[in-house]
Image (cartoon, rainbow, N blue to C red; front, side):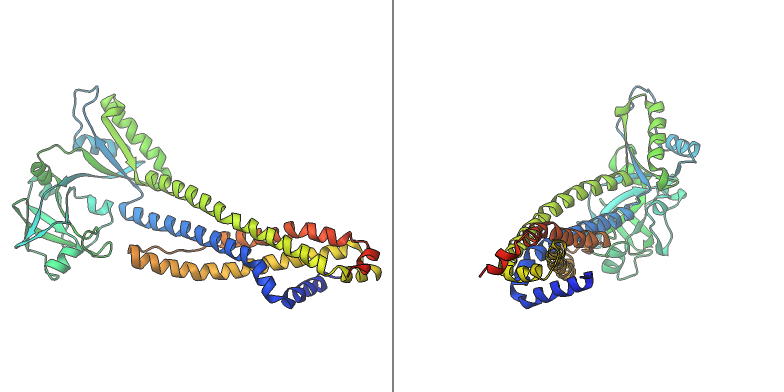
Length: 397
């Protein structure tokens, strides 16, 4: 008997009892659906985090200076620029950053959610911020501590009705002139990265009554992220002679760490969901044992007519594998439907642009496991059927 004949016979037996076959497949369907959806959720979370960190600049590092360390010198912007220039093979751009706490007032309206940050002229290139109107902050704004600023698209569209250029706003009671408007970066809503004001870091440091101790540095290439961080840390150690005097953190390192934690969580959830596949396999084995009992006389007739044990065994193994594989296919189809529903729920409830996207690997893995389970749990019933004594089988009623 050829494999195609065995397959057709298995298919006919499955279709002869549709309800029982569907109930037998149910554990496999649920298990495959759960595994594919969970792995799709993990893939969606990874892509969402990557996109989010991309806006922060995955080729950037943040330098925080906590003190003088063993050195009597204080490292300032010019010292750090010199380090960047000397390590041009690994480091590229530099910008001080100063967070300004307080209130932003535009006319009589107070903007509670608007962030105010003092930055250098290279900050906009580092963060890939583009202009729609006006100009960016320049060296002259920094050197003269000018009261100029660049605003995000939210303030421009919502407060100034698209005409922010040349207008003024107040930060902690001090008036600033808007010299540039940025393109929309996130979703242009209140509290987003578009709801921001950028002013010269020298002006911001004076308003904050403190020295500049936070810097953003870019790498020449993300491929050398680890080497770039080591080079920068070594230069800072040579200056301070104290590892506690500074801290260097890279966005790519943070992304890698978060991705690793997410993958561990998703793997654990997928394994838990995969337990239902084992339960489904046990259900298939149980039904196949019942099937062997019901078809004892049929098996006896076939053996009496000369059917060999391996053909009997192959028939029942194939039937179990087809049942399980069909359940896997139905589970995969259901997982895509649930993934679309989950995506819509996440976007509407959490307001996050995240897509639950099943991967080809997860689909093939789930299908392969489902078919493998059918073969594994179908083996014992098939072995039992193949070893039936034809005389006893023919007498069975």
